[in-house]
Amino acid sequence: HGYWGNSIGIMNYSGMNKVADENSFAVCYPQGTKDNNDTNHWNAQLGISKTNDVAYLSELARYLQDKHNLDSIRTYSCGHSNGGFMSYTLACEAPDVFKAVASMAGTMSGYTWKHRDMAKPISVLQIHGLNDETVPIEGIKARGWGGAPHMDSVIEYWTDLNQCSTTDSSYFPDNTKAYYYTNGKNNTAVWYYKIDKWGHDWAASKNASNTGTIASEVIWEFFSSVGSKRLDQVEGTT
Image 1: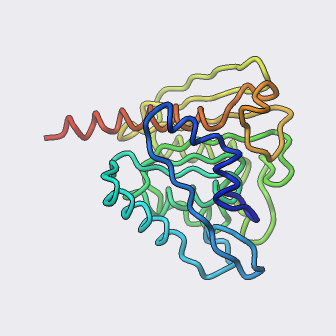
Image 2: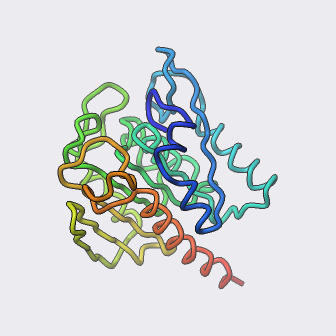
Image 3: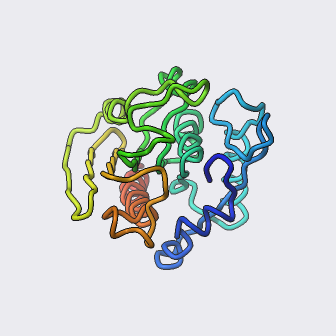
Protein backbone atom coordinates (compact mmCIF):
# COMPACT_ATOMS: atom_id res chain seq x y z
CA HIS A 1 0.00 0.00 0.00
CA GLY A 2 0.97 3.61 -0.39
CA TYR A 3 1.78 6.32 2.16
CA TRP A 4 -1.31 7.00 4.30
CA GLY A 5 -2.80 3.77 2.91
CA ASN A 6 -3.47 0.37 4.42
CA SER A 7 -3.62 -3.30 3.55
CA ILE A 8 -7.41 -3.45 3.16
CA GLY A 9 -7.36 -0.49 0.81
CA ILE A 10 -4.84 -1.94 -1.64
CA MET A 11 -6.53 -5.33 -1.48
CA ASN A 12 -9.76 -3.67 -2.60
CA TYR A 13 -8.45 -1.34 -5.30
CA SER A 14 -5.65 -3.44 -6.79
CA GLY A 15 -7.90 -6.26 -7.99
CA MET A 16 -5.14 -8.73 -7.16
CA ASN A 17 -7.42 -11.25 -5.40
CA LYS A 18 -9.29 -11.88 -8.64
CA VAL A 19 -6.05 -12.44 -10.57
CA ALA A 20 -4.74 -14.72 -7.80
CA ASP A 21 -7.93 -16.81 -7.85
CA GLU A 22 -7.79 -17.13 -11.62
CA ASN A 23 -4.12 -18.14 -11.69
CA SER A 24 -3.75 -20.11 -8.43
CA PHE A 25 -1.10 -18.09 -6.64
CA ALA A 26 -0.99 -16.78 -3.08
CA VAL A 27 -1.17 -13.05 -2.37
CA CYS A 28 -0.53 -11.27 0.93
CA TYR A 29 -1.29 -7.66 1.90
CA PRO A 30 0.98 -6.62 4.79
CA GLN A 31 0.22 -3.54 6.89
CA GLY A 32 2.79 -0.78 7.31
CA THR A 33 3.42 0.80 10.71
CA LYS A 34 3.23 4.46 11.77
CA ASP A 35 6.11 6.79 10.93
CA ASN A 36 7.32 9.75 13.01
CA ASN A 37 4.24 11.71 11.87
CA ASP A 38 1.84 8.92 12.87
CA THR A 39 1.21 8.00 9.22
CA ASN A 40 1.07 4.49 7.77
CA HIS A 41 4.21 3.93 5.75
CA TRP A 42 6.90 1.56 4.51
CA ASN A 43 10.38 2.57 5.58
CA ALA A 44 12.27 2.31 2.29
CA GLN A 45 15.27 3.87 4.07
CA LEU A 46 13.36 7.17 4.04
CA GLY A 47 14.57 8.60 7.33
CA ILE A 48 11.00 9.09 8.63
CA SER A 49 11.02 6.25 11.18
CA LYS A 50 13.26 3.60 12.69
CA THR A 51 11.11 0.71 11.48
CA ASN A 52 13.11 -2.08 9.83
CA ASP A 53 10.68 -3.07 7.11
CA VAL A 54 13.31 -5.00 5.16
CA ALA A 55 13.62 -7.39 8.11
CA TYR A 56 9.87 -7.46 8.75
CA LEU A 57 8.85 -8.24 5.17
CA SER A 58 11.63 -10.79 4.75
CA GLU A 59 10.56 -12.61 7.92
CA LEU A 60 6.92 -12.45 6.87
CA ALA A 61 7.77 -14.01 3.50
CA ARG A 62 9.74 -16.82 5.13
CA TYR A 63 6.93 -17.46 7.61
CA LEU A 64 4.33 -17.70 4.85
CA GLN A 65 6.58 -19.97 2.79
CA ASP A 66 6.94 -22.32 5.75
CA LYS A 67 3.31 -22.21 6.94
CA HIS A 68 1.70 -22.60 3.51
CA ASN A 69 4.43 -24.51 1.63
CA LEU A 70 4.98 -21.62 -0.78
CA ASP A 71 7.75 -21.55 -3.35
CA SER A 72 10.80 -19.56 -2.18
CA ILE A 73 12.04 -19.44 -5.78
CA ARG A 74 8.89 -17.55 -6.81
CA THR A 75 8.30 -15.05 -4.02
CA TYR A 76 7.88 -11.43 -5.13
CA SER A 77 7.09 -7.95 -3.88
CA CYS A 78 4.90 -5.35 -5.57
CA GLY A 79 3.45 -2.10 -4.35
CA HIS A 80 1.78 1.20 -5.15
CA SER A 81 3.56 4.51 -4.50
CA ASN A 82 5.37 4.10 -1.12
CA GLY A 83 4.87 0.35 -1.62
CA GLY A 84 6.76 0.68 -4.89
CA PHE A 85 9.59 2.48 -3.08
CA MET A 86 9.68 -0.40 -0.60
CA SER A 87 9.79 -2.99 -3.35
CA TYR A 88 12.88 -1.34 -4.87
CA THR A 89 14.55 -1.33 -1.45
CA LEU A 90 13.77 -5.04 -1.08
CA ALA A 91 15.24 -5.64 -4.54
CA CYS A 92 18.50 -4.10 -3.38
CA GLU A 93 18.64 -5.40 0.19
CA ALA A 94 16.74 -8.71 0.18
CA PRO A 95 17.13 -10.35 -3.26
CA ASP A 96 17.68 -13.67 -1.49
CA VAL A 97 14.02 -13.51 -0.40
CA PHE A 98 12.25 -11.52 -3.13
CA LYS A 99 13.19 -12.79 -6.57
CA ALA A 100 11.53 -9.99 -8.58
CA VAL A 101 9.73 -6.73 -7.79
CA ALA A 102 7.08 -4.50 -9.33
CA SER A 103 6.27 -0.86 -8.70
CA MET A 104 3.14 1.08 -9.65
CA ALA A 105 3.84 4.84 -9.35
CA GLY A 106 6.83 4.36 -7.05
CA THR A 107 10.56 4.81 -7.52
CA MET A 108 13.80 4.31 -5.61
CA SER A 109 14.27 6.31 -2.42
CA GLY A 110 17.19 8.69 -2.19
CA TYR A 111 19.11 6.31 0.08
CA THR A 112 18.44 3.26 -2.07
CA TRP A 113 19.49 5.08 -5.23
CA LYS A 114 22.63 6.44 -3.56
CA HIS A 115 23.57 2.94 -2.38
CA ARG A 116 22.50 1.14 -5.56
CA ASP A 117 25.96 -0.40 -5.90
CA MET A 118 24.80 -2.99 -3.37
CA ALA A 119 22.22 -4.29 -5.84
CA LYS A 120 22.49 -7.58 -7.70
CA PRO A 121 20.67 -8.56 -10.92
CA ILE A 122 16.94 -8.96 -10.28
CA SER A 123 13.87 -8.61 -12.48
CA VAL A 124 12.02 -5.29 -12.20
CA LEU A 125 8.66 -4.00 -13.50
CA GLN A 126 7.76 -0.30 -13.40
CA ILE A 127 4.33 1.15 -14.31
CA HIS A 128 4.16 4.95 -14.26
CA GLY A 129 1.77 7.68 -15.32
CA LEU A 130 3.31 10.54 -17.27
CA ASN A 131 1.04 13.01 -15.44
CA ASP A 132 1.91 11.75 -11.95
CA GLU A 133 2.43 14.84 -9.76
CA THR A 134 2.93 12.93 -6.48
CA VAL A 135 5.87 10.84 -7.70
CA PRO A 136 6.79 12.60 -10.96
CA ILE A 137 8.39 10.44 -13.60
CA GLU A 138 11.11 13.10 -13.81
CA GLY A 139 12.17 12.35 -10.20
CA ILE A 140 11.35 14.07 -6.91
CA LYS A 141 13.30 16.42 -4.67
CA ALA A 142 11.74 15.84 -1.23
CA ARG A 143 14.14 14.83 1.56
CA GLY A 144 14.42 11.05 1.92
CA TRP A 145 11.88 10.34 -0.79
CA GLY A 146 13.91 12.13 -3.46
CA GLY A 147 17.27 11.37 -4.97
CA ALA A 148 16.52 9.00 -7.80
CA PRO A 149 16.65 10.56 -11.28
CA HIS A 150 14.12 10.40 -14.10
CA MET A 151 12.48 6.97 -14.23
CA ASP A 152 14.01 6.42 -17.67
CA SER A 153 17.44 6.57 -16.00
CA VAL A 154 16.33 4.22 -13.21
CA ILE A 155 15.18 1.70 -15.82
CA GLU A 156 18.43 2.14 -17.74
CA TYR A 157 20.33 1.36 -14.53
CA TRP A 158 18.45 -1.91 -13.98
CA THR A 159 18.72 -3.01 -17.60
CA ASP A 160 22.48 -2.38 -17.50
CA LEU A 161 22.85 -4.17 -14.16
CA ASN A 162 20.86 -7.13 -15.45
CA GLN A 163 22.81 -7.09 -18.74
CA CYS A 164 19.60 -7.37 -20.74
CA SER A 165 20.44 -8.09 -24.38
CA THR A 166 17.00 -7.93 -26.05
CA THR A 167 14.71 -4.92 -26.37
CA ASP A 168 11.11 -4.88 -27.59
CA SER A 169 8.17 -2.51 -27.26
CA SER A 170 4.40 -2.53 -27.60
CA TYR A 171 1.77 0.16 -28.05
CA PHE A 172 -1.64 -0.29 -26.46
CA PRO A 173 -4.67 1.46 -27.93
CA ASP A 174 -5.33 3.59 -24.85
CA ASN A 175 -2.27 5.64 -23.93
CA THR A 176 0.21 2.95 -22.83
CA LYS A 177 3.62 2.21 -24.29
CA ALA A 178 5.48 -0.79 -22.90
CA TYR A 179 9.18 -1.56 -23.14
CA TYR A 180 10.57 -5.04 -22.56
CA TYR A 181 14.25 -5.63 -21.81
CA THR A 182 14.92 -9.35 -21.58
CA ASN A 183 17.52 -12.14 -21.72
CA GLY A 184 19.42 -10.63 -18.81
CA LYS A 185 21.87 -12.27 -16.45
CA ASN A 186 20.27 -15.22 -14.63
CA ASN A 187 17.26 -14.84 -16.96
CA THR A 188 16.36 -11.44 -15.51
CA ALA A 189 14.15 -8.93 -17.29
CA VAL A 190 13.01 -5.32 -16.95
CA TRP A 191 9.53 -4.21 -18.06
CA TYR A 192 8.59 -0.52 -18.23
CA TYR A 193 5.02 0.72 -18.80
CA LYS A 194 4.52 4.45 -19.43
CA ILE A 195 0.91 5.65 -19.36
CA ASP A 196 0.11 8.94 -21.07
CA LYS A 197 -2.46 11.26 -19.44
CA TRP A 198 -2.34 9.23 -16.22
CA GLY A 199 -1.57 10.36 -12.68
CA HIS A 200 -0.76 8.64 -9.40
CA ASP A 201 -3.72 6.23 -9.20
CA TRP A 202 -3.49 2.48 -9.55
CA ALA A 203 -4.35 1.43 -13.10
CA ALA A 204 -7.30 -0.89 -12.45
CA SER A 205 -10.17 -2.54 -14.26
CA LYS A 206 -12.64 0.28 -13.54
CA ASN A 207 -10.49 2.70 -15.52
CA ALA A 208 -8.70 0.32 -17.89
CA SER A 209 -10.29 1.97 -20.91
CA ASN A 210 -8.35 5.12 -20.02
CA THR A 211 -4.94 3.45 -19.80
CA GLY A 212 -4.76 0.25 -21.84
CA THR A 213 -3.32 -1.24 -18.65
CA ILE A 214 -4.72 -3.26 -15.75
CA ALA A 215 -1.84 -3.19 -13.29
CA SER A 216 -2.71 -6.40 -11.42
CA GLU A 217 -2.79 -8.40 -14.66
CA VAL A 218 0.48 -6.89 -15.94
CA ILE A 219 2.18 -7.62 -12.60
CA TRP A 220 1.10 -11.24 -12.68
CA GLU A 221 2.11 -11.61 -16.32
CA PHE A 222 5.53 -10.24 -15.42
CA PHE A 223 6.05 -12.35 -12.30
CA SER A 224 4.85 -15.54 -13.97
CA SER A 225 7.12 -14.90 -16.96
CA VAL A 226 10.32 -14.28 -15.00
CA GLY A 227 9.37 -16.94 -12.46
CA SER A 228 9.03 -19.70 -15.05
CA LYS A 229 12.43 -18.81 -16.50
CA ARG A 230 14.03 -18.80 -13.07
CA LEU A 231 12.44 -22.15 -12.20
CA ASP A 232 13.73 -23.65 -15.45
CA GLN A 233 17.20 -22.44 -14.58
CA VAL A 234 17.06 -23.98 -11.09
CA GLU A 235 15.66 -27.27 -12.33
CA GLY A 236 18.40 -27.41 -14.97
CA THR A 237 21.15 -27.05 -12.35
CA THR A 238 22.98 -30.20 -11.32
